[in-house]
Structure formats: C-alpha cells, structure tokens
Amino acid sequence: MIDRSLLPPKGTKDLPPELAILFEEIVSKIEEKFKEYGFDPVITPIVEYWEILKGKYGEEAEKKEIWRFKIPQSKKWYALKYDQTVPLARFFARFQPKLPFKRYVIDRTYRYDEPQKGRYREFWQADADIVGSKYPEADAEIINLMIDIYDSLGFKDSYIRISDRRALENIVKEVDEKEKFLEIARIIDKWDKIGKEGVLSELKKITNKAEKIIEKLEENPEEYYPKEFLEIIDLVENKNRLSIDIKLARGFDYYTGMIYEVWMKDFNRAIGGGGRYDNLIKTFVGKEIPAVGGSIGINPLIDVGLEKGIFRINRKTYTKVAVVYIGNTFREAWNIANKLRKAGLYVYIDLMRRNFKKQMDYVVEKDVRYLIIVGEVDLKENKVTFQDRKTHEKIKIEIDNLEKIKEFID
Image 1 (cartoon, rainbow, N blue to C red):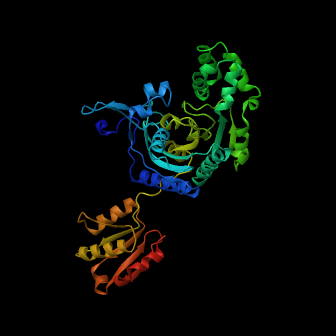
Image 2 (spheres, rainbow, N blue to C red):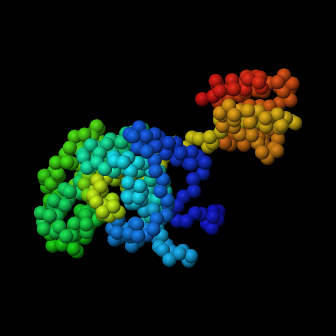
Image 3 (spheres, helix red, strand yellow):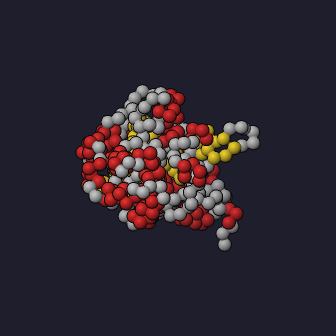
C-alpha cells in the first residue's frame, strides 16, 4: 500500500538511481552533440519575473499553464520557467553577446498542464538556439542537429514534421483574415487532437471563412511556402526524415518562420520541437534580432524510448568495484577502497558493519560486477582476490599493484 502523502506533486516524478542513470546518459549524449555543432552552455534561473514571460506565449498558456506566484515579503510577481526560449531572449538582451550567439541549455521547465502519458508539470528540456542569423542555413543546422541527436539516441524511426508560419499567414491573408491570424493558428495547431471537423467547428466560431481556410490547407499547400523555406529543405542532410505539413502551427505566439516537431509512430505527442522567432528578442532590445532554435523534451523522450525498447534500464549503480571484507579486515579494506578511488575507479565499501554474506547480498542486489575480496589469509601475503561476478574468474593481486585491475574492467 503506497502512502500517498509521500508522492511528489501531481505531474512531477521521482527518479530512482536506475532511471536517474539512464537520464544522465541521455543528457550526456545530447550535450555532446550540442558541442559538436559549436554550441556553448548558458544557465538561467528557474524563476523569472512574471513581466518577463507575460505576453510571449499566448492567452491560453498564460491564463492556465504558467506557474506564477507572489511571496509575502515581495511586491513583485514571479513565474517558473515555461520554456527555455524567453529566458534566452532576456539573457541576450542583458549581455548582448557577439553574433552569431549559439547556446544550449539543459534544465527544468514548468507548465501547469493536465498530466497524462508523456506530459508533465515539471520536465526537462534540452534546447539549442542560434541568435543573429536570418539565413536558411541556421534553420537547416537546427534540423540537422536534431536528426543527428535522435539518431544517436537510437530513435531511427523518428521523423520531423516541418512547416513555415509564413505559409499559414499567406493563406489567412488570402482569405482576408489577417487580423485573426494568431487565433486561427492556435486552432489549426489542435488538428492532431481534435481532427478536421473539430478544427472546422472551432474556426467557425471566429470566422465565416472557415471552410475556405480548410480547403486551402488541403489543396496545393506547397504554393504558399516562401522561397526561404525551400532553401532550408534543400540544406537538410536527411530529407527522407522530413514530413512537410502545413497544418503544423505550433502554439506559441512568438514563432515567425520555419517550425517543426519531432514525432514517433504510435506515440500521442511530439517529443521535440522548435522554430524561428525573429521578433521575440526585439521585445527586450527594441530592434529585430533573428533567432531560431530547437527543444528536446527529455521526459517524453525517456517514456517513448522505454516503451519501444530503445532504452533499457540495465544499470542500478555507477559503482564499478565493491570492496568486501571477511573477518577483522575492515581497516585494510577501507584503505584499499581509498586507493582504488584515487586510481579513478568508482568504488563501494560497506558502511553498515555487516558480515560478509550481507555485504554480498547488497552487492548482488545492486548488480556490481567486480569485487575486491579482502581476507586475512590473502593479507598475510599482501594480496587481495579480484573477482568478475559475470565470468566467475578470480585472480590474486598484490596490494601494491592494485591499479592492475583496471586492465580487467570494462
């Protein structure tokens, strides 16, 4: 029976060691790819002033999903990060780094969403952004980077749904509803959730051109794409991974050009997304600074990876070697453990003063493969026994030559 009072808040998640190790391995691979493409890290606070986030995401997000609060000792309103992009815009306005500015960030994000499969109220995002370039090669680099990252993680069946906000704008202008573009875009963005009839019904509430908009979305949509979008597609290395879909709108108000999402078959939501946002930084610096970026949702990535067998929970500990001792040899074992750590190994030694059997029970439970067994007989010869639990191989090693075990450790 679970004591529900010990559960974390709804929409958040505890990660036990085996999941935390998987998480760190994934983050490490993503971070390495960011570095390969010339991105550098920045860190911004989890909390921002509400005024910084206000007016950037759209009415629904700001009314229902942003965690904002006021504390008794302050007159100001605060908010938890809703994404990594608006904090980047504030950061850029403050420091005005040399262009192009290529940054990545891997951090927590907070949205007061309704928790469901692949959707959380606290989750991790890995973002990469290019600030300063208005050219298609910047957009293409983001797409190439994302495909490279998902491939490196084993998501060979992932694909990029890609479009351009300007194509949708061209349709809305053609039906003479330019002033309602953002409202229309937000509704079209729900196509995957509510279907064609649902979108049509929602559009009819705000425009008498609903049928015409749907018609243009479905007939010859390619004629509405700008030349720059076609240049982006041309520069993408793996074009077979792209699915051009004019119905993709992305919900945030700040997008201005190319937009994309990463999808997997049989999973109910995107596991990444992003696009161009040339006007966002202008709200902070007063002049247009072009920018484009992409974001990986690490929590849904783990969910779908485990579900599809791409990821496996096969490590319970980082420990490589367990030093176990027999009889009255703890002090010698203690010194040996410290020597192994100084040699660069991840080492466990029992701190509970348990007997040899219970020490071994713990080692087996944690699935530590390699053992250094310290016994009184071996110590008389200034030796210990090294054992590989997987192969059952045992060898005697002199204490003065402990580093030799590194030759036998994977």
